[in-house]
Image (cartoon, rainbow, N blue to C red; front, side):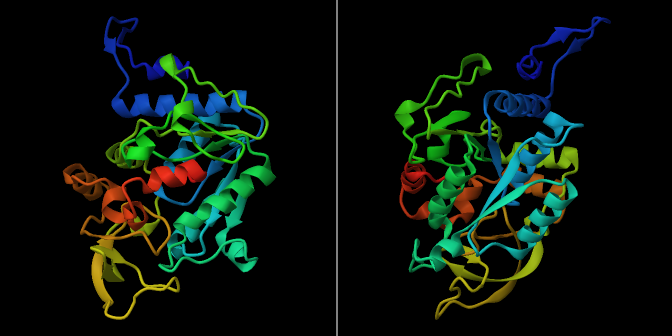
Length: 315
C-alpha cells in the first residue's frame, strides 16, 4: 500500500538486493496515500488551486493518485483580483487540459457588495478569509486540500496533516490530533471541516527537485525574466492597479524571478539569473531565508500575523 511504501523501510528483493525508496519517492507516496485517505473518508473534498508551485505539485500528485481515473475533487481558487496575469492564464489552461471543475471565490465581488473593505495598503491577501469560508459553506466542502508546508512559517509548522476547523472556520492549535503511523482522524461535527496538507513534510527544495524530476510546467514568472519592479520595505514589487508605486518609489527594470506567488501587492520578486530548473535548485539550496520570509510582505505585519489569520479561518 502507499502507507507501507511511505515508511521507506529497506527490504530484500527476490534477488537479495537491498531496496529503499528515494527521499522524493517517500514524500510522493505519503502524499498519494493522503489523497486516497481523504477520498475514502470525506464526501465533498476540494483542492485549493492558485496556480502557484505548491498547488501545482499538489494537483500533479492528485492526478497520480487516481490515474487513470479523473481527479474526484473540484478545484477552488480564492481570486484576490490582484493576481499575476501569467498565473491566471496557467490556471485556466491546466483546468481545461485536465477537464477539471473550478470554483472561483472573488474578493472583488465581496468588495463590490460592501461585505469587505479595501485595506489602506492595497493588500488583499488578508481579505481572502471571508470569500474562502463562504465558498466552503456554500459548496458544502468537508475537506479542503492546501499546499502549506511546515518549513514555510512558524504557524504552519504547528499544523497536522489533517487540521480540524470549527463551524466558523477557525483554527485552535489545542485541538490538534495525534497522527501516529500515518493514521489520520477526519471525524468532525456538522458545520466543521478539515484542512488537509499533503505537502506538510516537504521543503521548498523538495518541491523544486520534484518539479525537476517530474518535468512539471510552471508559470514563467518562477524563472528569471526582465520585469518592471519598484522597491518597498526591502522587496521588489510589481506595479499595478492595486496602488503601487507610491510617490518616491521608482519603477525600474530588473532581472528577477518569484519564489512564491500570491497577491501582487505583497509578493516580492528576488534578483536572480536562474532561468532553468537546475539553476533554481542550486539557488534555493544556497538560500538561508524561507520563501515567505524573503518575499511575502503580509507575513511581516507581526510575529504572529499568520497564526492570527489562521485562527480566523485563513489557510
